[in-house]
Image (cartoon, rainbow, N blue to C red; front, side):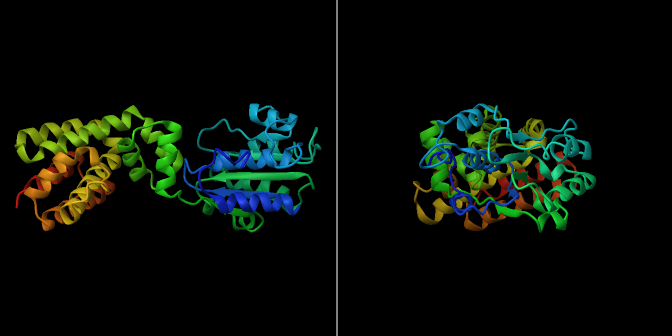
Length: 332
């Protein structure tokens, strides 16, 4: 599918956008709603190219003047709204770049398209300024709002936009994309898929991130050695883990995935379905040394640790208690 070929998943949204163009029922305003990395930007850009394509046959063709301009980021009728303040899209941003500009007719195309990234950061004043334009837009105007939180918009804006909610991409498609396009090995792809939960952008980021790999290796070091650690060793590990305090959820999630693997292998002896299949030797050893109840206790302790950290309970104390609970429950 030209123009959409680099987008994994969300076929329903792609079909909806294509149908809107083919049936000449393009809305003046769309909301692309989904978490960071879910593909909102790619979809909006592909839709903009589709609307502006001047080629014959299947669109976007990728080779006409309009498609080439859009691909290079130099299309005069595809405008990206920028904002100087990192956490706010203010009323002046919307007035100067969108409301004031939209009355000028397209330079060369049928449509004049405005892409608004981080739209959830619009202030109430900015949203009200935008609302007047959405209520009475020029016939050629198409506004694309990209957001991680559609509920942050005024109800009056939501009611006047077509809301497109991004869907998680099936794990098998994410895994295939990572192996074929990012060229990561299967065991690395499996870990990224497990943590991405259908978010293709996050999967790519995790599979290529040296920092995430560092966190994973630190967690694996604990997992492989915790049974033999004494109190001083555990205290030393807590100090090491404190370096990842801002990403502690990733660290704890790695531990949880490991023990789900242990639980699964203990019940099935099926190594092929493990996330950490490259660590089968250690997982096999732990299944022999712990009970089902012990692993369940560990998984419960991991969830409690997350809750305590969210409640701002002392970090070192929380982690020490967790590691001691893990150690105690790895012995039958």
